[in-house]
Each structure stands twice: as C-alpha cells, then as structure tokens.
Image (cartoon, rainbow, N blue to C red; front, side, top):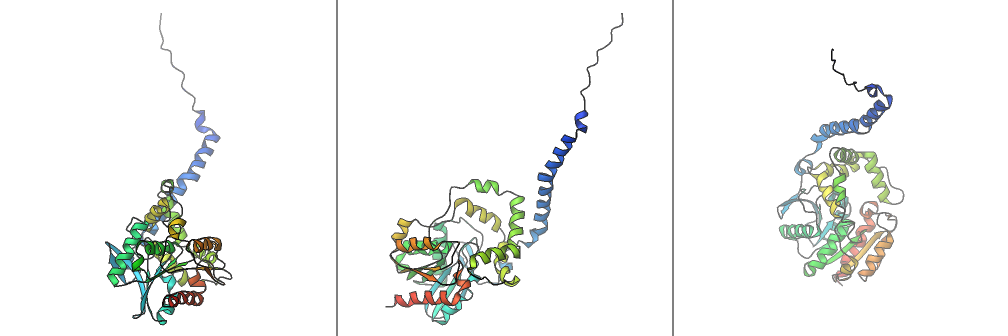
Length: 329
C-alpha cells in the first residue's frame, strides 16, 4: 500500500490584498513616516543657519564664570544702570530706553541672559547661575552698586540679586515682571520635545516673520505697528545661535526661575514696580501683588502692553529716571 505525505494547507494570503490593510499602511505613512522624513530633510536643510554667537553678533562680549556674555552699552559717565531682558529678548529691546538713560547722565549696560540673545549657551539655567554670571559681569566691567532694571523674566533676576547682595545694589526696578518663579517639575516636557519634530518646529516658528510678528504684536499693547523684517530679525536671529534649541528645552523642563512672594517681601533695597497698563502677558493684578509684597506702589505706563520699553520707550525711561533721581533724595 502506498503511503502519501499529507500536505499541510497553506495559509491564505488574501489579507495581503485587503483594502483595509493598505488603508492602514497608508495612514501610518501619512501620519508618521512622511512627516518624519520631511522634518529630517528640513532639519538638514536649515542646519547651516545655526552658528556661533560671535558669527551673528559683533559684540561687545565679556567673559564671566567661563561663559561668553553678550551685552550693549551706552554712556561713559555717571552712576551705572544694568538692564536685564525677559524670555526670548535680546539686549536690542533696550535700544531706545538705554540711550535715553545715558543722555540723562548714566552708564547703561544691557545684558543678554543666557540662553537668550547672543550669550553663550552654557547652563545650568538656574537663578543661582544667573546671579553668578551677573556678579561676574559686573566685576569684569567695573560696575559698582548699579540700579538693576529687570523686564519680565529679568525682574526675578534683579530682585534675587537685590536680596542676595543688598549692599552691592543701589535699587531694583521690576518692569512688567512679578519676579515670581513659574512652572517646574515638568521633566516630561523634554521627553516630548524630540528630534526631528521639535527641531523642525523650532526652526520654522523662530524664523517666521508672520508668527514672530503676531507674538510681538500681541505683547505690544493697543494699536501695534506693522513690524519691518529688520525689526523681527532682531528677535529671530538670536535663535540661530548654536545650542539654543536644546538650551530652551532645558530651561522649560526646570521651569522659569524666580522668587516666592515671602522671599520678595524680604527685599529691602529701594525698589519700584512699573507696568504696562495694557499688559495681557503678565496681568496688572500680578504686578499689584508683587508691589504689595514689596511695600511699594504699582506705577503704570499708559498705552503699553508687556513690552513697555518698546511700545512706550519715552515714558518707560522717564519712570526709571524718576526712580533713580528719588534715590538721591
């Protein structure tokens, strides 16, 4: 009797021809593969735009604690004033206020706090390190007992310096900044901001006149002007400094450094709180809360939003000068 091997039935491959399968594959490619490839291509194409700070800004620079700090200066005589900008603000934002303070008889310095402006992207981006850099900057340039004017995020640095070294600070001005810490405990943010998507979005957003103009216009206050490309480029170009994207991720993950209201209440150096009357980024109410903690009055700047020094430079300079003049009385 002949014995034949029993063949196992071959599995059906009809699923290969299933339209549902190919719709799913197409969806995966559309949602994940194509955007990923596009992001990688965009990252590679725009990689040449990232440069050392010294290639994007001619200076001046000063070395402090091993970090190259960019700054601007106006005036050669008189008592010193140090201007500290906020998040994503290069020292250029003081281009109108700085000269006005200098013409009134002051030596004025506007410092780029890293990771903003053209200072070297070298962390950590903590209050302790910012104060270390500020102290080193003052020592390097021979700045003694300055009036510190901090805008937005910079307000926290100015207040913290006045609290840490009260004998070395003549006075502190909080401009559109409550000096309080914000965020923190958000380490998961750094897990979401991954290559290539974060890098592509970062470079696209920070290089778009339309988007940067919309953000600046929203912070301006009533009736913002039409911004020229040259003006918007003053904000966009610092984002091309090598290492900025990673530095911003590090800063966002740890939260924005600042003080607490009880700490702010311990500040004893002369102080003032100036605020854009139409500020919708940091509310006027938060300014009043900080002014109350400091046992001083909130002074508003009519017609200004969050960027008072840009929207109303004449009034902003006058308010700062009035505070400085009051120190001599």
